[in-house]
Every structure is written in C-alpha cells, then in structure tokens.
Amino acid sequence: MDKIPILRMGAFLLVTIQVDLYDRLALNLEADLVQMVNKTNAKGVLIDISAVSIVDSFMGRIIGNIASMSKILDAETVVVGMQPAVAITLIELGLPLKGVHTALDMEKGMNLLKSMIEETEEDADEDQTNDDFITE
Amino acid sequence: MSQKTYQLLKNKKKNILELWMKNQLADEGLREDLISNDELRSQSEELITALVSNLSGDNFTNLDSDEWSPVIEILGGIAITRARQGFSPRETGNFVFSLKEALLEVLQQEISDDPKTLFTESLKINRMMDSLSVVTFETFIKGREEVILRQTDEITEISTPVIRVWDGILALPIIGTLDSARTQIVMENLLQEIVETGSSIAILDISGVPAVDSLVAQHLIKTVSATRLMGAECIISGIRPEIAQTVVHLGIDLSNIITKATLASALAYSFKVMRLEVKKISTVTKF
Image (cartoon, rainbow over all chains, first blue to last red; front, side):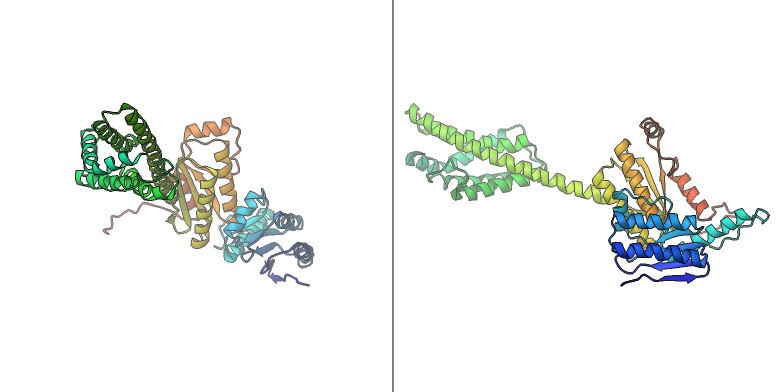
C-alpha cells in the first residue's frame, strides 16, 4: 500500500505529494498527518503539491480538512506549488480553499510559516519589543 | 438556353466585354483607388471567358453541377479579394449586375425581331446571373467573416499582456469587456506568468473595462481566488467611481479582495508588502 511520507523539520512537518492522489491515499494522508501533528507538536504543516496535476472536489475538501484540523491542533497549513491548471479547476469547482495559506514554492512557504509562527509568539508575549525580526 | 443564343453570345463575347467595361467604368462607385482599370479588365475577361464557354451545358441554371465550378471558383476568388481589399457589398454586387446588363443589352440588339424568344432567353440569363450574384455575396461575406475572425484572434492575443513591473510584481491591464472566454485566457496567462517569474503580487488593472456587472465581478473574483491558490496576492486597481457605485448597488462583496483606486497606489501597496522603499535622492546623479 502506498504511503505518503511526512517529514519533520524543526517545528514543521513537510509533505511532498509526488503521485496523483486517489481517495484512499488522501484519506490516509489526512489521518497520518493529524496523528503526526499531535505527536510532534508541530507548529506548521507544509504541503507541496507541485507534482499534482489532477484534482477533484474530494481532494480539494481533503486539503481544506487538513488545514482545519491542523488549525485546531495549533498548526498552520501552507499549500505550496499549485499548478495553474489545478488552481483554475479548484476555482471552477467552487473551492477557493478558505483558511488555507498558499505560497508559490517551498522556500516562500517556509518563510511564510516562520513569519506566522513568530507573529503568534509575539502576540503571546506582549512584553517583547516590536522589532522587525522576521527573516526574509 | 438555345444553341442559337449560345452561339450568339459566344460570338459577341468581345462586345459583351466592352459593354460590361463601359458599364463598370461609368459607374459612380468605381474604386480606382482599390483596383486599376487594367486589372479590372483582366478580371472581367477571365470571368466572361469561363462563363461563355460554360453556357452550352444543359444544366446551366444548376450551379451545383461540376460544369459551373470553374466559373464559381473565379467569381469566388474575385469576391474574396474584394472583401479583403475593402470593397463595399454594393460595389462588389455592381460588378456582377453590370455584367447582366451587358448580356441583356447584347441579347436585345441581336434578337430584336422576335420578342417572345427575347423574353424567354432574357429570363434564363436573368436567373443565371441572379444565382451568380448570390454566390458572389456568399463568398464576399465569407471573406469578410474571415477578416473579422482573424482580427478577433489578434485582439485576444494583444489585449491580455502580462507586464513585469518589478521583480516579483506583475501587472495585467485589462482593456475591453471581460467575458468568460477572455477571463479564462487572462487567468491562464496570469497564472502561467506567476509560475514562470515566481512573482508574489499580481495587479489587475481594470481601468480599461467599460462596465462591471455581476458576471464580470464574478470573473474578477475567480481570477483573484485562483491567484491566491497559487500562493500569490492579487490586487484589483483602476476602479472608477461609477464602477464602485455599480458594484455596491449590485450588492457584490469585494471586501476580501484588496482594491486600489489607481495602479500607482496598487504599486505603492505592493512595495510596502515586499518591504521595498522608493525615495528621492538628494543629489542629482548623471546617468
């Protein structure tokens, strides 16, 4: 049975989807990922879908679900590298993926996650100075 | 058509041509700027030769028959060239109608003693020439449509340029009405360009869009959402006061889209997002 690997990198989890997702695989990924977020106490999830060329409404919903679930477990989700055709399809299907953060590539997604986490830390600790220390 | 008339027309071919040329040259609508007299004469002669050699056939009123194909080909060629050269339908029509006049005139001169034959033969020639005029118009319109189709293609090509205004900032000025087909092209071009350049901000400038109704707004929202899915931010700029009014009156919710009044303010906003600064330098440096 195929499995999509989930890599841990510091406070983030990396998921690179290299194959076209079928329904069972997507459901497994959802379950594994939530387990993994819980276990590692991850602050961010980065999903790279640059190799995915076909999506349907089910896939769109799974991505949305992952984002919502991670959010409940206090982790932000960033989807990176979406193909133009995939983006158009999702829009035509009426799935604008609200609540999911997006970035052009892995690097930008990583920066986005870092800045988001630093922001939340800033919010949590009001005493901290308002210096701009977000790495760009 | 009787053999007699056919022979008569065949013998009088030169006369007919002369008469036809006279008719054409006398016409007020003659376009000497578009076609020279010599060219006109050679065109006419070619057509008349094909026509006369064809009259002997039995089914001379049936234009679908194979015998007619050379004539129709010549006529079609003339009509299409004229459509491209910019002749008006009237001028193209007159080209064929004046031939009819010439034919009838010759016929009248030759069969003046027998009114009954003259009438039946004229009727036949009339019918034949009318069919030919219809063919001319059909080809003429087809030629025009080809021109229009080509222009439409060109307009869609040139009207959706994606401009790279800064490293990481794309601008897309939209000029003309946005319909579904165009939105699709705009969206595809924009998303493709975002991937190629790795830009994180796209500015959609709609100052050239004449009107925004709920459908156009829907298209814009779609484009913005698709850009967002790709991981880039989309700003809509160039919203004129009238458009702002209609959007609000139609109850379209643009609140989760960044909108700016001008391209300049959208660019300023992009600079702010990208943490860039534009400032005036104190000393003048020579370039």
